[in-house]
Length: 511
Image (cartoon, rainbow, N blue to C red; front, side):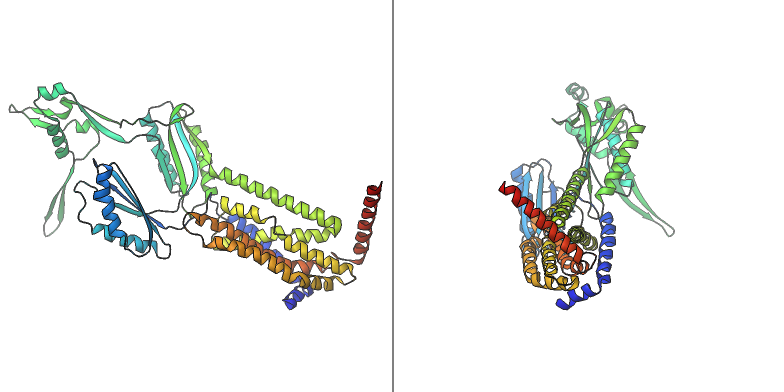
């Protein structure tokens, strides 16, 4: 270690090369780091959803949930299974250990569930999918003095615009009930035509469907026979023939029923500023950027409101704004830290010396950004918390080394000799102190499950402190060894200035 430090002191060009690399690479990396509100988590969950219309929670538990749990319990790579059985619906969540490929576990789960032959006949096929790592970007609200059906149509057009942009891929609409076809028949009409509800429902079911009737083959061609007559248009549904009368006339559905396309009756509504609204939730995948998506949304909302007067689109909450406020706090704390280092060391040691000590803060962050860019780090609330946490201890090693170098310089040693001796004297203590902090944060790197997001805190602190050590041991002594930083005139002047200040302070205290 002594020879390496002596090499950098003798040839400060290499220290300057390190500075140039760290600054240029760090700025480039910081500007290109992706932003996310929370850290991107690894895909470790598999969700299984099953619909069973008309089933009670107990029937869902006994007929669906328990059988799925028994089928997948013995699979390799599964850590925990949780389930919820409710009316008409069951949801099973499988948490994997993270040590196996989740796609292989997903295939095993599908094969095991496909092998279950005892599901109730009316239950729908299970929907099995791995849970993608998603983080929120923004919440938007669409309001207007129009019907909810028109509002839904506009919201779906907005969703299509978002998905076609190529910038984002995760959009969810909410705030309105599901659409349904309502066929309303009065009791008097049923009695008049001597019909029952079951007969009408059966006629609708038999006439409103798509049918495959096989194929016709010849030596020249193959013709597939299909009857595609499934529709949700109330007008077309009204043409369904319920019954053919003996006199040749026909009874159509429109003759005895009111057919409407409307929202299902749900006891809830969504309001924004007192108006009916539809909520739009925009999320992002790990490979997408929070900043780019937020900028696109702001521009889209502005253009949308200029083109539409009867509806209004507003961003009700932007997660980027919260992230920017945390960044501003980091800038503010970093600036205050630099200023305090410059003032404190400038008063008692040297202004140039304090500059190189304070340089340890941006150097550590720039180096951390450079390594983070190459390793996939994102700027998020958790990583920024780590930066705020470590900013106060980044210059501790630099202050100790610089003060000791200056102490050796005041003993009459040359700047280069003082830099070498001063660094080597406190190297074991500084190395032990910083390494202890690194070891204290290292367990955060191994957290899993719900605490996995804390890894970014440990990563930021450990990498920043490691780079701070490199800067303090090799770059800082190389610059303090320069005669422009430590010189005889400056030493005598600083010593006399401090001594005079102390004499004045003592004199004032004795009055």
